[in-house]
Length: 130
Image (cartoon, rainbow, N blue to C red; front, top):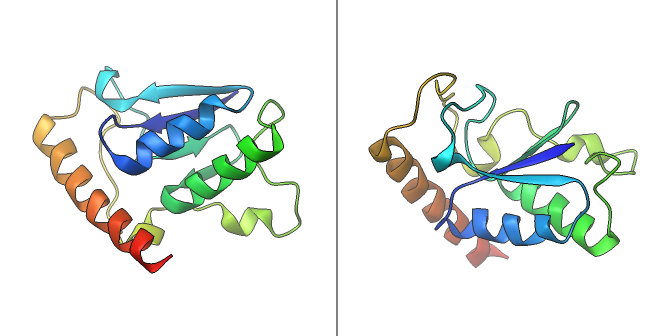
């Protein structure tokens, strides 16, 4: 099963959640309600399964493709030879390079708020360039 991690109120996360609801086999999780977050969740939106991770704009693009094609139940990797190049292992596509340390406990509201504000600025700039 694939999982989409998102944060309500974040424009990119909300868009990702909308796309995910149009796909098969994607569980949508609100990071603000989780008691603990896996250490690979270092930003939102994040689409992941046991083999692939798509972050930020790569996540949005992949979900949009999956919603258009009606896929999702058989994994999230694109069925193209260059598809793996679209998967990211960090959030550098968003201009962030740090790794979050959220593997145990809950996230503080200030940490989430600071991240989401920076993420929103990056998303707005990205959309302006489109």
